[in-house]
Amino acid sequence: MRFTIAIPAYKGKFLYECIHSILNQDFKDFELIIVNDASPENLDEIVQEFNDDRIVYFKNNVNIGAENVVDNWNRCLLYAKGDYFVLMGDDDTMRNNYLSVFNDLINCYPENDVYHCRSFIINNDSEVIGLTPSWPNRESIYENMWHRLNKFRSQYVSDFVYKRERLVKTGGYYKLPLAWASDDITSYIVASDKGIVHTQEPVFCYRQSEYTISNSGSNDLKMNAIIEEEKWVDSFLKNNLPDNLLDRYFYNMIKYDKDKIFLKKRIDTIAYNGFTKGYYLRDMIKFISKKNNYRLSLQHLIYALILAIKKNRSKIT
Image (cartoon, rainbow, N blue to C red; front, side):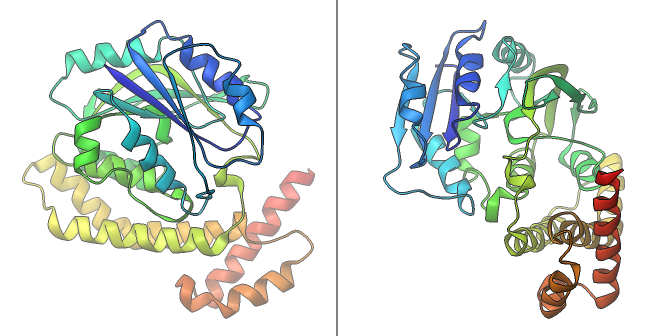
């Protein structure tokens, strides 16, 4: 079997549209694994609307939950039989040529382990509202990491296709709370030897909505994940000094910018996810008590508060 597409499912709102987009692929050699994470919604009814023997449906007895969602990602990987693996969000969609475009890319570069596509951003009505930036055709992990850490790139877990054997061998998806940066680190690990191959054709549609984890609360978990992400980057830089001149340039830039990048990540997480409109003083007191854990100073927290107030004012205007 060429591909396994897996949906770790919990939300029902867009699940039918997600499944339909997958079954409508013009490349037919795939299986679709759906793992219901003990959802309180009636996902069974949605899945049963499709009479297709490519669907393999599993149900977790106990909810793994958003904090440990990567465990469900890796459970999906455990069930997979395809040579190449795609993890789909339960509210995202594929354009009908997603698999055929990736299959052509794989045929051109069979020695690689990680493949990536450009993505459309869609809203709750499935209208296209954005497009992710273009990438070079091929790039090393150092170039990719530098662009991603500096937020010059937008990418999602489902616009990556992995050689399943390699993904399993490297330990599956890298676990962080709420899967915060888990997809990034996973791609870094799997691409560390041979880099990433990219297609400019946008064949994945990422849904931007209030239901995504990135728009949820859980500030402590997000801050812990950012701190763990920085530790991983530190370890990677310590143990992976490149010989190539271009890669050495990006390596040095990552090393030079790293402290500023992760400080900004921590401040932005507090500013855009932490403060509740009208409760700034209450939230500020809470964050001051945790500032050492968050590796932030009082000055950093005041700056985050100013950003939060500006954000809420811009929503009004």
